[in-house]
Each structure stands twice: as structure tokens, then as C-alpha cells.
Image (cartoon, rainbow over all chains, first blue to last red; front, side, top):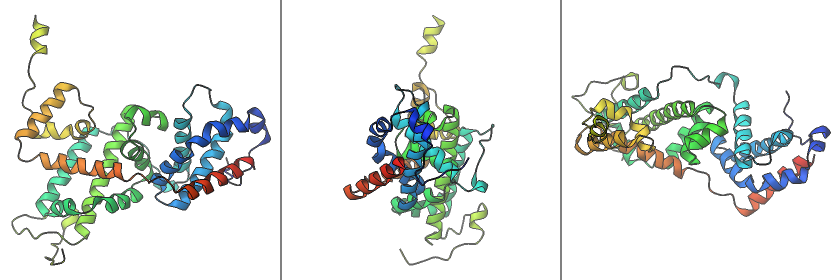
Length: 220
Length: 89
């Protein structure tokens, strides 16, 4: 299937429905779709491209849209699909059937505990999380980014996100927990890289991230 | 009679591992009431767990605050016009 963004929709699709009706229904949600696209792509130009592609794809699927369905949710679904489709093949991810969300919660706390032992947690707590979170989201694999953006950035419920993503609520939960844990790992890595790791002589290094002690720094 | 007795059992103390396994469910408000109260009771007395929850919550707040601001009127108008042009071929 090729995806033209030049604006050529097949005449059969347009004939199938009133294009003015399509615009009347969908254009009011453009600001929301654009915000979602910017949160997903973390890049204004790519976000605009994604918004255009979303509307073109939605127009192609217009004949499948039921009058009593939720147009905003439909647009978000189309947008998220387009976003994933534009993701590099090798970055795609398949949900593991035995993902254990409780283990992700445990891993999150364990990572924070380790960060406390090394002094990184203290740095992370003093950091302005705004820029760090933006950086972390930008490198979070697309597969997790969509779920985290829907629930934690857009404020949707698991059930709403499940409908947008076309997956079970349990899948939203497991992707969400793992995505959040990966984000926390990134935040703690940024804190560590900032070079503020306190020297803790009595604590042995743990894990691959602390294989050499950082020198004490006066830059605070 | 037995069912009433079970319903009135107060939440029991849970250990750190149990509390932490419920971290995200707790922060998302998705725990059933008894399980929620058990975590809250644990956090009130535990010296180790609360900072993990605090940091996770701080991260969630940062995520919520990271939503892109609404586009300026001219940016919005430009994108709207671009999308309309694309739709009309």
C-alpha cells in the first residue's frame, strides 16, 4: 500500500461520501490531533506532516466511519497508526505475551532505589524534569511512546487509550508500565550524565551503569 | 454471617514488595479500595518505599505538563489551510 501525501484521494472514495461533511466533522479536532502529533513526533515539521497524513488517511477510510462513532477517537487512531507506520522497521516492537506489569512496577522502584544508593536520585530530584522528560520521550521507542502519550500526556483513561490503539486494556497497562519504567531509566541516566553523582565510598557499584566511579564535581 | 465478617476485615499490613508491585496501579487510582488502603497504610509507616512513589509521581506530573501548548493562531491557520488543500487534491 503506498501512502501519498500529495493530496490525491481516489475519486471512488470521495464519491462515497460528502467531502464537506468529512471536513465539517473532522476539522474541529485538528488542534487536538496536532497536539497529539507533536507529542508523538517531538518535532513540529514532522508533526505537521503527520497531521496531514492523518487527515488524508481518514478521508480514505471515511466510508467506514459510522455516524454515531467518536470522530476524535477515530482521528487519534488513524494518527497513531500513521505514526507507527512511519517508524523505522527495526524499531518496531511486538508485545510479549508474558509481559508482567507488576514486575515493571518492581523494576521501577528497584531502579530508583539503586539511584538513591549512588546519589543519582538526589540529582534527578533537583533536575528540571521538563526538558529531561521531553528528551526521554523523544528516544522512547515509538511503540511505548504512543501509549504513554495517550495516557500520561493526553490524560486518557486506559479504556479510552485501548480503543484508540485497538488493543486490550491489559495491553495498554503492560505497555504503559514498561514505557514509564524506560522513561525513568532515561531520566536517571541523564541525571548521572550530568556528572553530579555523589561519591559514596561505602556503597559498591551496582549494575552496568556504574562500572566506574564518577569523580566528585564542584559544578552544581 | 461469614461473608459479613470477611467484608469488615480491615486492610492488613503488606510488605514492601507487595506495595511496590502496586506502584503504578496505585498512582493511577486503579486499585480496588482495600488494596489501595493497604498501600497507603504501608507508605505511612515505611522508611524505604515513599521516595519511589514520590519520584514516579513527579515523573507523571512532568509528563502531563509536557503536552504541546496550543499552536499560535497563525500556525493553526496555516496547518488548517494546508490540510484543506491536501484533502481537496
